[in-house]
Amino acid sequence: MSDILLKIKEEIDANEVVLFMKGTADAPRCGFSSLVATILNRIGVEFKDIDVLVDPEIRQGIKDFSDWPTIPQLYVRGEFIGGCDIIKEMYENGELQELIKVKG
Image (cartoon, rainbow, N blue to C red; front, side, top):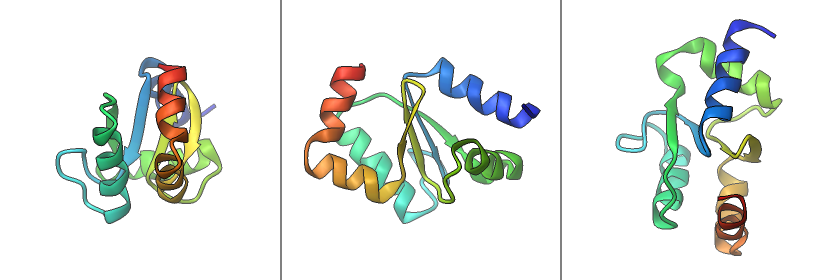
């Protein structure tokens, strides 16, 4: 496993909820990232935000790690949950809240 993939795995393992996003939770730099951060804030979950724009290796590495082509990417307790569309749908039907509650 490459250094960048190990670094990504360490972040995912060290934090209950991790959002790889463009920008930060306080200053998102993409509408999709903003929406996912807003959803997580609405349900009151603490999460680690990792700005993929500050490091091109992380930006590509997270796509390789998950085998998922887009950002944002949400991880809950080490498990890849999905990107913006999946998170939005899960939030709207209550699945995300249940997952966070069950996993948390």
